[in-house]
Image (cartoon, rainbow over all chains, first blue to last red; front, side, top):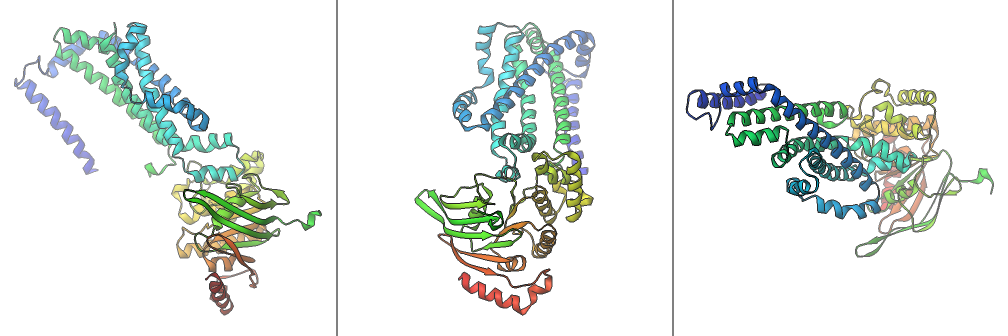
Length: 248
Length: 254
């Protein structure tokens, strides 16, 4: 318990440094805004901020949800059959090293600057993470479990459903957390490059007008949401993997 | 052929050749064993004698390359609940509770829920696990997890219960306790058991007959009847008779 408190100490220290630097007048507000400026932004542009945030979260969530679901399904298909695997593996291996951000120009050229290319980018990023993790997770299920199921009379499909699926849940939840984290970065980056709304767009405009305060508020907001989402996933994870050794 | 003359398990001139990196490796050669209904037979040998390979072939998880393997007169083509297996390492499903683990094979067999519950209750009681029905395996000790494995295998009412060094990973005290426990369950259920172990005394304590295999390639060395009366108790292990037979068998093993 006492050791955990150390974490708060370091955070409080960082905040203290920030307060001293900004309130003490050691740095210009243009370089690093203080609490006062942040409060002003929040109170005057509250409505605008939440509108942009709403756009961003819609895209982030749809992309994350669709991409993760597709990734898991594709991963399960690939891992289920060695012919499917032989067919699909090379494609996955080609896609895996592609930095998702690198396809943004391509998406904009094909689809313009609407929400569709942005959602597609998030889908792509989450899909790759989940497909690779799912295949890996299925391969790592100890053979003894599938053997035990088969000697108890379970068919291939029944074994897949009642042994493979539950056994991979812990590693899948880990991958889903990674994908959720990545999806926030991807959606904001997509909005930097081509959007007419969203928190990324808002930040680019703020940058043009040298509004460091608006940028910092956006960073804090999007991080806070990302943190909350991560905490939620961890909660669900604990519930779904009560059986596993990790939470002993 | 008359039904009564059928052996529960019949292995005739069975052989297994692996395609290894440096050519073919003969794991098993000319194995002849037959096991009667209700018999407890152990397969004993040093490591590398192919005893676990033989068991996994009987289980249908592995294939033989020559000879015949019949269960109730029918050739084995793959794994099935008529030959449930208790493995050496822990094979309880950690995501299921103790009760759900025991029920697993009965669910596969599509036994109705009510009947499943009755049988699960029975087995939990028999295995002294009734207090842990809703616990997850990770909360239990190694010995108790082994009991779940045994219960899960018994639940499908197999013709033959195959056991692959099931107590190998347990400490001495727990192992001896589990051996007595197994005999108690076996004497109540009268299932045919084929038990693989490298532990001579374990095999002697448990079995009606012991099949000794010699290594590289795995061949049948000798089949010996155990003369000890049942029910067997811990005292048997300390008896002179037991000790002398053990030494004789030890010499045969080489």
